[in-house]
Length: 470
Ligand code: AMP
Ligand code: ZN
Image 1: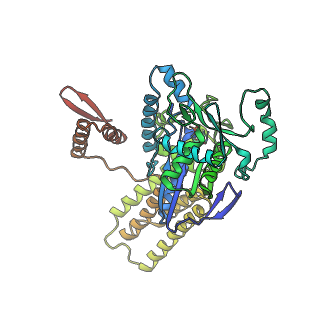
Image 2: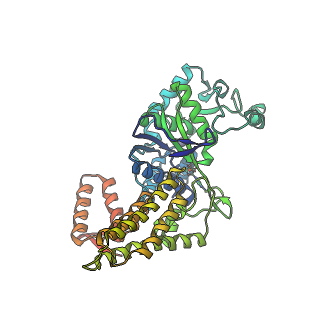
Image 3: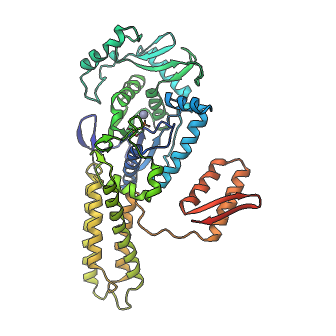
């Protein structure tokens, strides 16, 4: 399997640190709003990478953080007159609902920056002790010049960057030794959340959060670090500097970055205001369509969002679903004397397997989901033209399972959902009531969204919980 590594700018053979295991960290969102479909791109893409690695037999430890302390969160909290905690908790819960609806599996661990402050203070202290950091009036900076390899990920010309940023120093706005030095710790301002530290009451810089959470949950050296391409510089470059100077070893072996989701060929972003939230899209489409749309392009190619492409994704997904239900139908109705030519049946199965190999080859080539979907389409076409009720139910079932299985590796659900029975719904409601009683509101919410995903709405009434199907 070959993966494109931003560090070397080449496709490299994937060799994990430990055979059979993959340690993977994906930078997660800053939680101050509903996520937009640009934020959804790395979620879907790297969830698919994880699924494929698991399909290949790797045990994947997948860590993805929520940045829950940030200027934008504080601003939103002040706007609403509530605490930052309330804002971040609200949008983490909303983000998890969107992830579930996009069939993005929860990470092995979703650390929160605010729960890891001790580790951050400790790492900053180590950097101070080693001479890689300095304190000016309670603000701690990283001394980039001391790290010889600074710039190795972004392949930028650092002298140009330095001269571009020099004005900051000249105007005395900044107390940094070098324009490329960045903040590790900053003192609190009025009304901001803060934690004690040896340098000031304050909060960590954004970059140190990921270095610390990655180290705590995955170790000093990891296999894959990933995120959107806007994170290459400065975020990931700074993470490398912090982690490698603190730990004295290489940080991540493979750096994977997705290209942007654009709209009218401009990056979709909150600041430009040109975004659609995942929630808005879910009002118009099954979010499986959004997932299909995202995977119909290679993750390193820019992808332009348009209604036409979403319609194409909807009909592509429908084509696969139709084939799957048609195969289920002909399997049920397969004739008693079906499959009387075992040799011919073997041949059809071998023909189908060729498309499975094609799928694997595409995914082995830097997770080329566009070609992998093309292989599923070819398999669908092949099944439509080669299988009838005259084939054995075993053969029809095997080909159907291949289509479902390949789609599942991409996180695409192509089987009709089995309706929840009334008794199952009642049991889940009882479990939710018990969870609420035990003040396990997270579990209670989880059950509510699980039911909502199946079109079941709950009404809390005075006579107890009532439910209805959509
Ligand atoms: P943020 O909340 O802005 O820190 O972004 C969370 C993740 O979404 C990061 O990995 C970003 O690189 C990624 N991201 C943000 N906007 C886009 C976009 N338009 N296309 C692709 N990825 C994006
Ligand atoms: Zn990060």
